[in-house]
Length: 468
Image 1: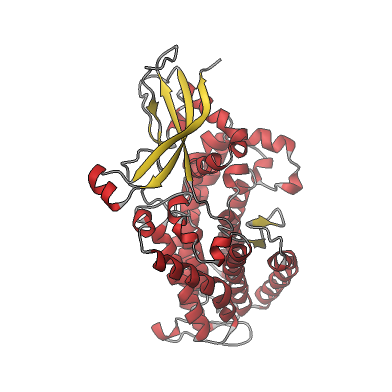
Image 2: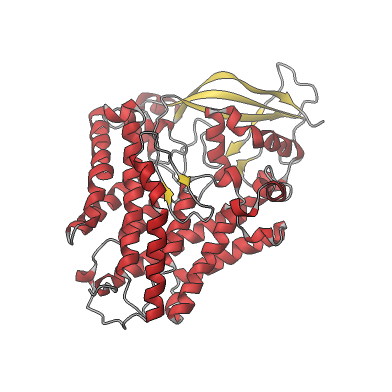
């Protein structure tokens, strides 16, 4: 390995690039399939209305030039095609500058989507994908060895992801300090997976071991990323194992998958392949990589100060291009799970004996007898926001009324976001929303009833409502 190119990391780069392309593909396909009801021209939070009130410098996007649902769909599907091409290795067929442009294109497209996505795109993994995607532009192809500086920047990013998540836990909820958060987490997390019930039913001493291991992996191991090999590889491997454990226990869109991809870039996979002699990097490429390194170093000041602050922010971007961000997850853990159940009736005048039928969502808990499904890395945005709405109805005020209105209209784009609509022929006359407390059943309750959840009525969130 010379001062610029790390020849031994060409396989790590290859696996990283293909993994990142797969995450891009999931992100673009999700955007294309879900945007119309969320941010389309007739969506709950329309893009044109957003662009009219937000200045360019706060939200740079291609949609400043033109917006229509057809143009947005074209951008999203174009991003999916580019991601598929990168997944197939198209960057290896181009000269170095062409490969860089090919990696730049999905980053520009996804940045344009995120910057008009509003609340629906306010998740930390959106910024993480953009930050990783930006660095990937400068990682090169088979014409050059992977630049040492870019590999270092990827480790710096992985450090911030893990260490930031560890600090926010330690500074946040007391249950992380006394190792009891996992008594509740698997039950109250936003999107349980098919194995979450079983994780919740693990013995409590094992939950304490999980919490302690999490602190070690996120607060101590990240520093080992900057040590010589094979220690750095061991540290990255431990992080990958931890992320795979999290993938099994819940649905966190592509957060865990992308973290695995970043960690791959820190692995020394040279024992798995024959040595390759790659050409020396051209001078212009070295200058570009040096400039990007300086830029990231300068932009890292505020995220670094945030890490050291007692008032640490979680999942925050400091620039509108999302180049260097701060990350974190589950600074607090809920002890009780509440869910909003939306129901409709065909009765023109609701009565106590009216037949109320529930809308079922794809991912979030609804029918107590339905085992949660695995969706990650695909991101069910409406399901996630319904979890936030149950925590704080005020958080859902900008869009919840729009959701109800579209259900009353029988809007096809909105109904496509759901698993089941109980009114296939005509929309209901009235809709209501009720809050229930959900808890996992015990082993004996599961055997007796076949239900994974037990739910108890809490209160009415929205009284029976009809279209005006």
